[in-house]
Length: 129
Figure 1: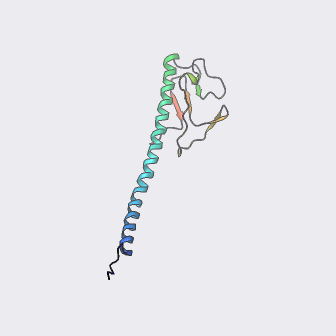
Figure 2: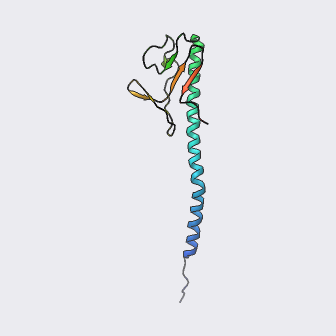
Figure 3: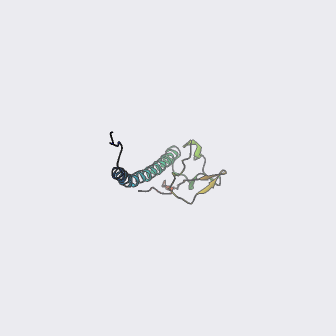
């Protein structure tokens, strides 16, 4: 009669589970950090797109005579500085990036661009590092 048993011992299973737990403890924080970095990169890319759109408007029309705000919440922007001419889709804030958002056209606005009379462009919220 053969009494040999096949399978893993309890000690072997505990060692394997411990190794997996250690690997997870190392990998999960790295993964979370990579997600946060991706959000920041997306946010900074959104700002670059908005700044480029504002530069296109200034290249086409020169410096504005009054400050221009995108989105134009009160309808007072100069002719030629209509937002729709320079950006087709307004970006939204990536999850985890916070900003006291404004309100425009029945929807929440995540970014605000101001082009002042000296040609300075300010995007809120600012870039993150």
